Image 1 (cartoon, rainbow, N blue to C red):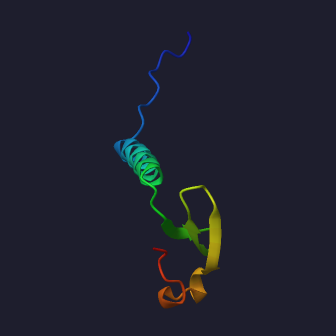
Image 2: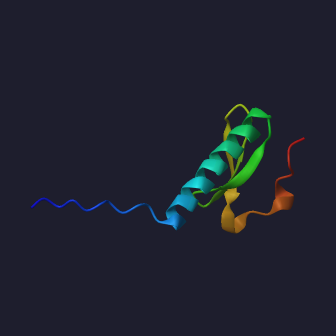
Image 3: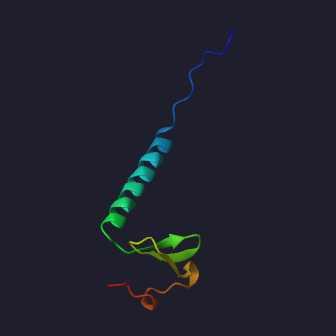
Length: 73
């Protein structure tokens, strides 16, 4: 007799994670569209992303000091 079991539904925690990921993508798209310069961590570096898509590595996370990299006007 073939197995007729119903596949398990995704756990609520996973569904919540997916909703957060989607919200983060939407928020980033909105920030880019509004021309915001964003500074964040990626792959162990603090990086700055400009509205034209240019990404500049500022410093390794362990060595980053905010006062060394003033926010662009």
